[in-house]
Length: 88
Image (tube, rainbow, N blue to C red; front, top):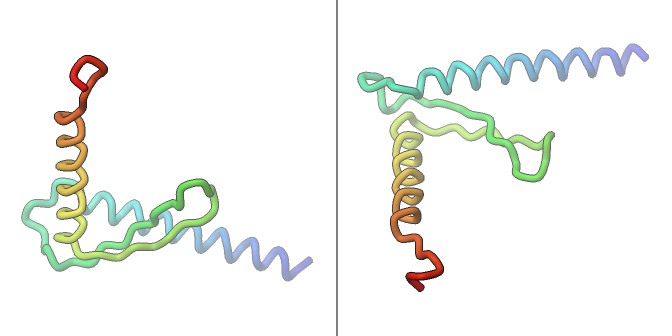
């Protein structure tokens, strides 16, 4: 009984610290033009198809920005190159 309560308390404290860390990292990443590009930022990435599995990914601010830029570019190009039923 004590062991299970301890495990639950440990999991809750770990989840709270991870949540506050990812909130800080994501708020630092948004709109920080003059920030250090070499600052390490860690984010919790959810695994698709699972509500429990999460991976912690750490990259520099510049790497996160480059990934965001490439993702945005891929979305834009796929939307502009979309062919409808008439354009085949």
